Image (cartoon, rainbow, N blue to C red; front, side, top):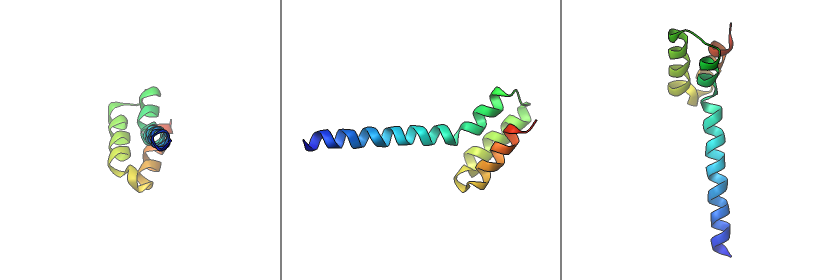
Amino acid sequence: MLFGINVLLIIKYIVAVGVLTCIFLFPSYLAAVTSKSKYDNMRVRVGSWLFGCLFVGWIFALFVSAKK
């Protein structure tokens, strides 16, 4: 019984990491889909990857990728 609980816990953590990764990389995906210039794509990726842990960098990357 204990083995089954550990497997479910591991699956839960794998799903949580996958969802957080998708949220973390969303600005880069949005910039690629909206056909931004290479310079804007680079700004979004650098802002998201380097400063995404500070939430302010992630918001900046999301703003740059979403603006028209």
